[in-house]
Length: 246
Image (cartoon, rainbow, N blue to C red):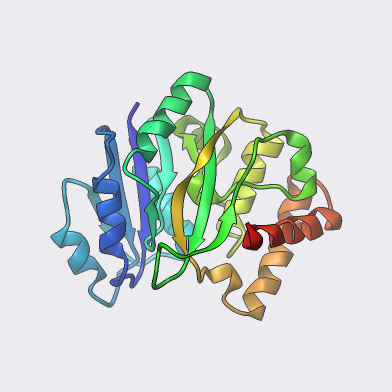
């Protein structure tokens, strides 16, 4: 199977090279790598070009990360699509190989796994250990979701059920997963291992304004996809507390 990996970037000169090298180091050979750059104003594009090893680059203004990821999906020609953000790396060089193997073994529509939030300055320092656990539909009403950066989905699912809804500024990834998992009930398999190291400092928790916006959008996602109500939102947020103490 051909795997498309999409990275959306804007002014990530400090981390983009490490992300690119993480993809390049993968043991699986049939990878299409697409970088969507939002017209970076620092040295990001220069670094991308310097490390270009036959991957696709699109550099143009966009309307935020979800718009950029949608552009990547449109350009994708792989059987499966995954995302690696511009300040993230794979936990080891066999991640894609193991993901493909899981797809083949389970004949599934999607595969997700575990994630480590790590320090911005020291990626060996784990801040938060997100162990997803096995999926079942009843967990959705309890606020369960897997870490989106670990999610790989067959391209045909995007064609059937749509891409990111850019009306959501922070929660479009949550909406996409709840639409796929809850509303359309695609088949899902869990790869019980850490596959992504993600640096802390995402947009959703950047300030109080963003936290409140995320909660508002999350509740809309929950109600729109008919997976619960306000209690689901509460449980979604409180369930993360234990991840800081593992």
